[in-house]
Length: 377
Image (cartoon, rainbow, N blue to C red; front, side, top):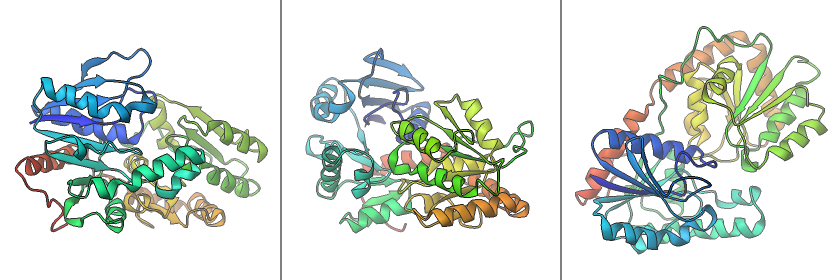
């Protein structure tokens, strides 16, 4: 197949996140299978306009904030010089509405729609822009086959008027060669918890800090690691200082993979207090290292975590409940061991090879004219 994928960013972009990891892992495997893969995305400082890496050809055009406005023109230019069999449209905040200007079979990918949660992340004007753009998805993608990463996202789209028969769930994967326990990296001697991911307001990392504050008196050795970078870092540092937690909370910023994964291995539990996710890839990555998770019982996270099996869920925003869940896991060694074993078994079900195989099958079915990819699922 000759595949054109369109996403705001590629994996090398400084702002690349989970959506870029997901698309890259799948596209690189499709390229390795012999398919011709082209990715159209925005440019960034010092990045070449075009380059080939990891079995795909990456074409960068425009800059991040206005990339969506140029997509129709750049897509037409690419299609004038190259024939593509199928287009992958990765819907990430601001949709491209590709069905308006592309006459090839299209597979849309949706991780999750922010909905009103976007107002927690950016200023009201920008949030309204995203909110209204997402609201048009059911209108412009109603007849487009859609691949989603969780059952929660599927149900959200259906509730907004999308056709369930056109939606197929393909779960994220992990690389078991990279995410795994390491006997040379044991759990920390003292209670250690961790947040892993982009530092964004909607991820509600301050809820974890408030829970640490609640446990300060009874667990004087408790340490929290925050691994990742993002626009909310300054506010979180100030929150930690205001709570008197500067010596208890370690901000690592952007961290090389080996150091990052060692922190996850050493942690007693990984915490994900986000208000909404498409899937919760860090849950599976932590589980694959034998580390249980505590996360909010919200769309996406409730799909990637199993309560009392791979970790514990709690009502979003309930700091007392989050504190209680942390206390349970930290003080109950047998519970941690049971959750750790369940985590390893659960994570073993997911792989990028499987996700790529399922995506390849979907693309073939769509090229053959089949659109009702969700029937029977």
